[in-house]
Length: 113
Length: 414
Ligand SMILES: Cc1cc2nc3c(=O)[nH]c(=O)nc-3n(C[C@H](O)[C@H](O)[C@H](O)COP(=O)(O)OP(=O)(O)OC[C@H]3O[C@@H](n4cnc5c(N)ncnc54)[C@H](O)[C@@H]3O)c2cc1C
Ligand code: SF4
Image (cartoon, rainbow over all chains, first blue to last red; front, side, top):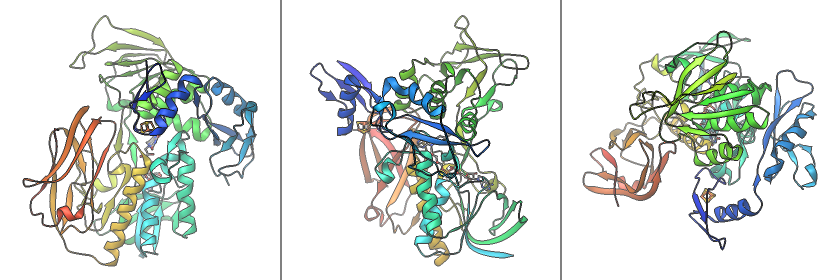
């Protein structure tokens, strides 16, 4: 038996997973999916910021296009901190394609004119 | 004096939603006044994920969420002025604002929507014993420095208060290389969402000390250390429980307060939320002045701010088109509830009534009941209600056709 809080949405259901991987306590199917993935292969969305080479005092926000291996969170931040973008940039622009060969991209999430 | 149909004060999520709704209902002469250099308000600094599940059925970061509304404002050609600070409003709806280009300007509006957001409680608001060195900062200010300007405020951090902004900053600063030593919370429960405790603290093994607070701040010029102590039921420090943490930053996440000084100037009645008292169309007790978003009551989910903003925009549009006389009845709450918004419903009731409230403490396995006299007009079972999550319910207008007495909201056994 394992207990955990579902982090998929702000509701935060308390989930229980038994030894046969049956999930209870979830209010929607996404909770069951989360519990299984958390026990087999935990992943997280990572958000951060990247320098803008032609702007002072301002950074642009970024995110992973999908949840990425939890163990790679710090590496993602390090990789992003080595980069910079040039304004103008827009929501959805790709900063890093296929980071660490995971199939996940790093996307810009802010419009800077 | 220049005349404008609808002036919206504050260009955050609430203000933009109100403007878009009023435009879509036929109001064309709209002006949004925003003191910052961008539209979007507080969401500009909330770069984390988790916005938009209700509104767009997908999870967006704050800047992505706000950009969708900025695009809608621009598509409609709704006018907005940035770096324009509203200094004063009058009961007759004269607005004084100032900006670098025009200086100080007065305009006359037919209706006003207040959407000025909230501010953070600061160190001055609570009495922490000890020195007053540099290095004590609110979580929202630290968030702005890091996520907008790119500066990490410290390397060794203690967080006071378990509000969501503090939790989110604990993760963010940890990922950027700071060491977050602990979060301490005065209450025996956390004020943050469960998911944020899981993904922001537990993921990084950051301890959360409930029923703990800062018993001393030490540092001459700069912060050197804080002492954390356990508190008893009366919130008094328990001697012998002291823990010392050497740190350069004490970050406060101890609550948000609606920003209503403009309304206070015109003696607009306010409620226990500190926001204005409103009717179900978000009109305050001052004719033609509406309020929505965090300046009315602090929201945890932006999607609900957007919905409330639309409601205010709808109310203002109707008011401008055709002012209607109406009666009103109070909405009363039992002591389990901290507050309810709106506090009044207009009669006769023409639209479904949405009520929002928070409970004072955790309540499990009860039902929420709304009564008119002895008749139950709404009832819903709630497995859990906690203070950090707003409860929202909608009563069908058909149930409210012949009401003559105040509505009463209560929490009862199932
Ligand atoms: C730090 C923080 C983190 C949050 N994190 C989350 C989250 O993770 N998920 C979630 O769903 N929700 C979150 N929320 C809640 C939600 O995002 C906010 O409740 C929502 O964005 C508030 O919108 P608003 O328009 O009411 O206020 P704001 O966005 O604060 O907008 C108010 C605007 O009014 C302007 N203004 C104020 N006074 C004046 C004046 N006198 N003249 C001109 N302009 C003025 C301000 O500059 C500002 O732009 C968070 C809130 C805060 C404060
Ligand atoms: S189980 Fe579903 S409703 Fe519950 S927190 Fe997870 S995603 Fe949200």
